[in-house]
Image 1 (cartoon, one colour):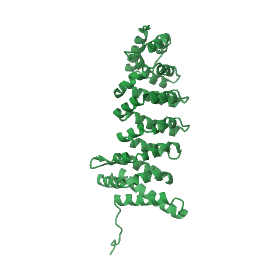
Image 2: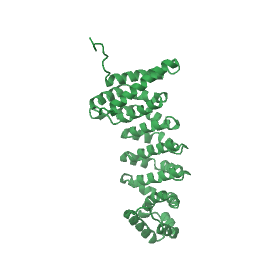
Image 3: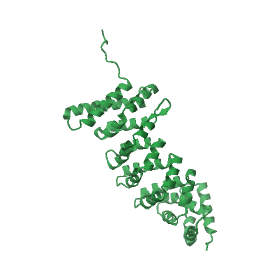
Image 4: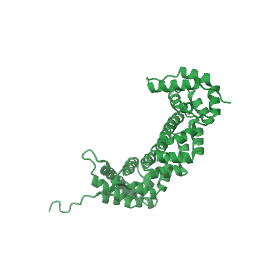
Length: 339
């Protein structure tokens, strides 16, 4: 008789369903539960979330099993477990939040029948992305929601939604938050959004050129915060040097206001900002169709620029950098003002 009444081990589907039931309970009963009952439920929820993470990531004793991961993923998106987990995240303790964040991140990569079903789900539930982005305003939730958001942006449809929504403007403000870890996380999300999906980014920048670079220049490149300026000028170089953005790059380097900003960055005391600014500045100089006002500025500042580049060295030897610098110097030295 021994072991006859042993309980059957729970399947991944069972664990997801039980997790969903507790999340619904927590979401609807947050004020009406007694403290002890609530603690009991939240402890059970944390245990389930830990088990779900173990199925997706494996543990010290075993690797994840693809069939179990597929079952878990399918059940997670069959009903609104993802939504509930995101919405209820503030109610979880810190460890459970970390586990939940890793679950949401992992689910973005899980395929069922060769499909990323997370992408299909998020396309129909875009308000969840609004919740994740708004999470940057909550110091307790920001880093958890930030990790989730970057993983969701892996899907091109998600990135397109975020870029085309008013949320993208909020990111400029979150990058300027006074909390270093949160502002750095928002900057990482911003970079992912503007570099991962080339065709989507190129289309977005072409359609939104004026307001986007107006904000980018004033809030980031001309920020009073050194780290914000450094990250922004590096990202600007990544964007403009990407071939997909050739049209945008040509437009950017034809603007005297943009040139003025980059020349100011070249004069910074920080070597890393100077170097990143140089990689953008050289595009203004290399442009074969420079507008007359760009040529006028370069000619008017020729002696200052040539003096700057004569002393412009980087810490480690870099043949490409030296070749680029020599080319820029030659180009500036040979410029003739246009009438």
